[in-house]
Image (cartoon, rainbow, N blue to C red):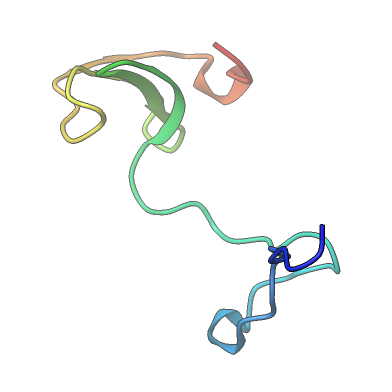
Length: 78
């Protein structure tokens, strides 16, 4: 379409230090639980280092429900 704006990723010098390819920028996971899945206001996550699974009922703002889970390293999809 003539006059259409093309949207594309651009290299941002502030991201230097992270591995990247021409098609993908790798960044570390932010601190806190890995959020595996979310639906409406509930989120399921886990802390691999602590061996715990977590449940939030406020979009991941707090994690009041947790329990030990021996196979936390084996969670790949919930």
